Image (cartoon, rainbow, N blue to C red; front, side, top):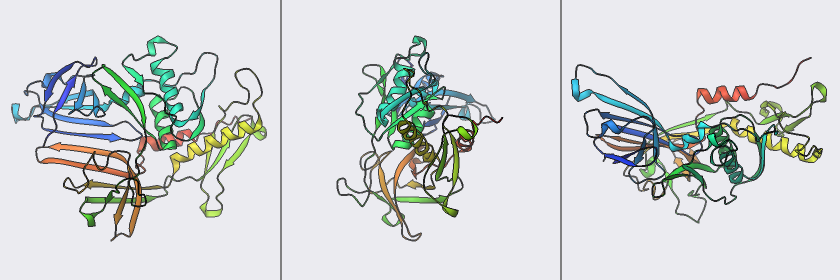
Length: 382
């Protein structure tokens, strides 16, 4: 059964409702930005509303909203019947990716301490909602009240893509994030989301077990890899050469030790009032940076699978994106508690299906390039 979609202008005026498209699939991500692809015959009523920067709202799901960023069409010997638009876009979260983190005037780095939720919302507020430069403001975006969820820590940023920074903080904290449509008030709401624990080892919520043996999984792909794994950080703060402040984060030894260098020269040793920061606080900040960066190099263990649509567990009722569930396959001797980090919904003429990623996402080529780039030393050779 196909899902009705509504097309909205950027000002959130409803332009059309469509349910006779050829196919549609979209991806929802806990830490990153989701995507959508829609195929529709150009002669269908309201197909002409699928224009760049218009919004696609899936049913009445305010957290399933996408911005059109790409259109293409081709004509073949099939004529009008096969004259289909291919529409692609990003989730509404992508609005955050349109900004970089710019520190306030006369400050080298924008630093924030507090809960992970507080830090995430601070950077969105500083760079989109209430920036010092009014031309950077996106008036449709507001921030939900800060509930100070997540671990406490500190973070600093300077001229980094805002969405990348929020995604990093999400991975470090385990908190998800989203931009949700508030159609009634014609605004977008940035908020942080907490996971639900639905594993067999807890007794608060009804457990969810995905397993071929329980007829809840159609297919399953398991990966365990150390190709991208690091577990000990050599963190370098300020100073030059032999005088540079260096600390280690981690205590692994011998063949179990996988080192990575982290340039943390941006961690200040003098505050905004030109007062010397205590060595204790400097070391604490360097340790925090090492722990944060190591999160990007965790041992990769994840499963990808197609969930049976007639599974005993109902999507968005019994489980949803971000929930921690149990995966079992007795034939492979695998039992794993993992978070649902990505969900792909597919709507075609042949029916509806769901694909999910459980656990750490498979790093893309671009992500690996970014990780390698972030390892580049800031040492000055003399």
